[in-house]
Image (cartoon, rainbow, N blue to C red; front, side, top):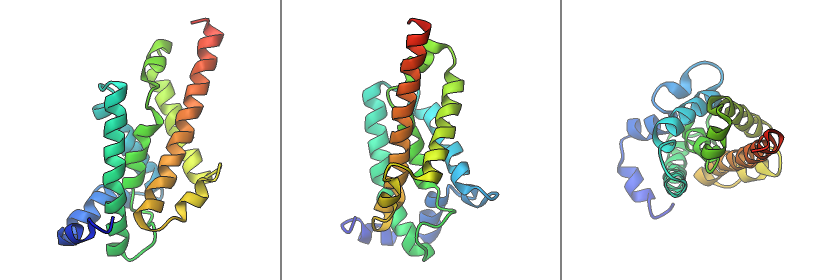
Length: 173
């Protein structure tokens, strides 16, 4: 991250803050994290859903790796630790919820039901921060901002895989 700092320092304030807050979306209403998760769900639907598993993994990793220094710089410019209106972390984490579950979701014929379940689970894990996720949030700068959300998404992904496995077993498929 330190290597990117000189480059990020050259970016205009409006661009950095706009990327971190998804423009005005981070300031809408009283639940900016939910707004970010909704944007992340749209991102998954449009960009990730058509990809292969390998494509999903590569794109998710790329977005997470880009979000870490951006959120670090966003914190610096907003002069606040993980400000609520900074929602880039939720946006890039939500696609992680669905890596590898597209085919099992499609096999049920209820893709949107499982996407809504994934959305709800992600918000639950992001807010409650179980399984040591809270400790990740304490990491410095953009690393802590992004990794707790990625961990919540990983917990969601695992839960979705388990639920889908149970559904397949119950349906005998």
